[in-house]
Length: 163
Length: 163
DNA sequence: GGTGAAAGCGAGGACCA
DNA sequence: TGGTCCTCGCTTTCACC
Image (cartoon, rainbow over the protein chains, first blue to last red):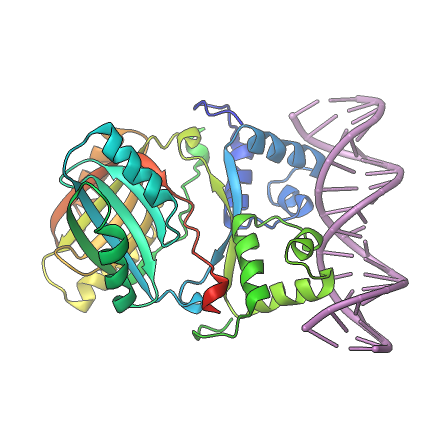
């Protein structure tokens, strides 16, 4: 898996990526038909894209509600200082907390933005107090709750125009 | 596809969901082996979970960098007022902008939190000015940039304990 | 709910243009 | 690169515990 940017991607690769991003379980034959190619070269392209790391993985998207995760929260965190040690420790800890769906180090007023799930508001409160607030070096926390998922799926735009 | 919450999920279902969340391309045979079941019942369970909407879809995760999306931004938006009309229009518009990876209606100071990708900072500036700022009813915008993806994948926790 | 088996299909490779 | 063919193993669906 290469991590270099700027891999050569032609129009077929991009169409393939678009399709596979929308439905990861497409068979090679189906995929081939959709991008108007025959199965073998289509399969080879996909393998190449996997090798190059353009395709990072295949995942089932699960319904949070039905799994009992009724609350999605966005938590902004400000650190007391920006020592590499403190931040690295924070990141390492956060990475291992399953309720933390995503975490970004961000620019601006706050240092980190976390997306978190919880069973309900009460659980979230407990989680915030026990698990987040108690981490070392945290100066300020600001939580917002998702009232409505307007758009999700985390699909990247794949435009043939930019090839 | 049902949308009701609280579907019956036993330990096997949860293990299955965990596996399929991590690797959507597992074959039924592989999946069955991992959860110590034979192929047929395993396949039936998966189908049931798809039917019930617990599994919402299968998606390839693509590498943003390699597709030329060098910038990930989090944009907080405050609306001038909260008229249903204005908000619905905003949501509908936003849903159709490919650069908008996700959008949540949130509680707190701001009304919406959007995750956006752009080729570079300059493109983002242009996008923010032309596409976002010009939407009707927007009072305030606050953008932060992702400096580092500490954790991603959007995997939900699936604990057998909560079954 | 679980097992076993049968039929049809796709993955993945060899090979040619 | 792309296309064709081939083979093995898997998916999928039975009928039956």
